[in-house]
Image (cartoon, rainbow, N blue to C red; front, side):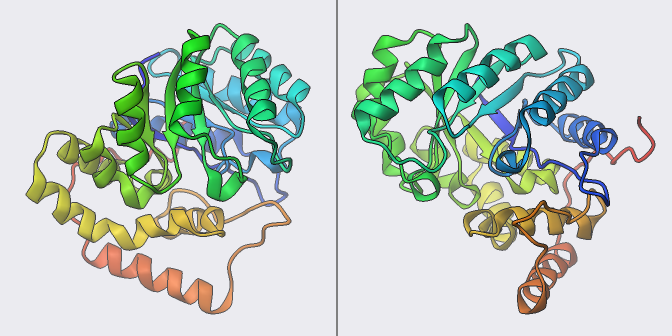
Length: 307
């Protein structure tokens, strides 16, 4: 498992009846890889994992693993209400052929460090797969501070990466100061990617990449290669879109952007509902402005007829 590069947190596509559209997800996965993405992360927050049954999650993993066919790693996000369910999903992800896991704290319950460590450790110990810890205190209410991350790293050999979504870029340098190169660090919020790379991040779990993979990869590469002028010119264009990844309705917004550019639809499962009114109008204005000024980046076409 190579934890580096741009890895989309893939959206989960739904049919008109809100069933999973596996055929579209195959095309979507292929398109993002053809545009330079380094791997695919399934069943994350953006993938609406909380609205999926266990069986649906496994079916998604099996579909994407078969689609990728070893061309790139497929990573399963592991989230559940209980530790036993999270462990079961981790084992199922290995059986489905995944290359790695992105491990989240449990839904709903915001425990103390002793409890959260036990939950994460149980998942790490249940699998031989390489694991990334997902730290998002804003969304999940659990904050894995650098010293706790170091403690986990000292006890689990298959703990290899951190998705840092605290929005505090100083966390990247703090983890580096304690652990050096022991863990790879991914930026987990879209509008902090250039700052995160400058602080030492080696990867990006991205959201708007679902609609703009070529631009996302170009931005990441420019920032990584210290092409400052190129990076900030692209970043300046991209930021109004990237900021959609940082608000409560980020799923609805990113799926809407996909729909606007013709690579998906805006359907979400309740309790989420598609955006309407002024929210919809503002999102439409943002996308229209972005498309009017879209930079010239080499892009592989979306294959509408691949099955």
